[in-house]
Image (cartoon, rainbow, N blue to C red; front, side, top):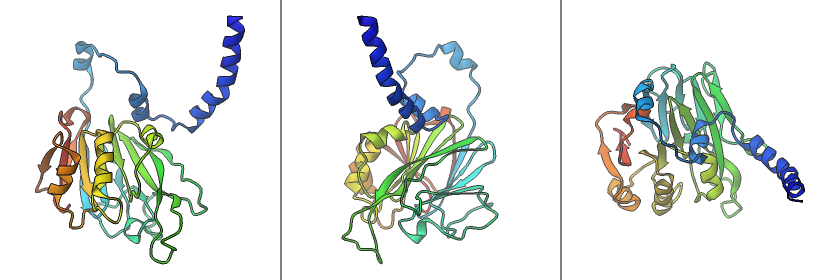
Length: 272
């Protein structure tokens, strides 16, 4: 009898498990690490592990960060063409809230243009490996602006949180986030080592709301963006004393899996 019950439960659970597997992004180490139980790693194996490679992150302006991978892939986030630095990116991600976060006429020499929305209203589904980086997204809703009926319902799946998995790092960019995240969002995002967070406090969401999200994501490095005139002291007060602040005079820094700070740190690059 027990074997029959087990068989029935297995058959009932099969479609659910299959659906979950189909929905999960392929090859995501950040999701796998977030959902796996912690495992001890022998000291001898840690010493034998290859040295982690560096990723370079540069603040260009507004919500645009450039990510340069060890394999030579250059990514620009929330790319409008207005904020550039160095060579042309190989990959650009975009969000549609304002024209400062996208362009419909990117330089044709950019080989990979990834929209965080679909024109037909369906959710954008991005899960692409480009060189040494896996790029995936988690969609959120956005408010209506300007020519739209601002009192209408939010535009479903109009924004994307982009996640970049490279050199053992999980890097997230929250985009033009307009609402709190629920458990399903956090589960789909997975583990983040570095997160880029809008701190304007008005155009995206309140400082209290974005601070709550920042605390829950528990990334080792927080990179503010979309700041306008927001007092940095106010943002720091809201996210809590467990975060250290590291204000720099440079626009770029390099980081690896091995050099992540042991205490959660807000790194403020020049121009933020």
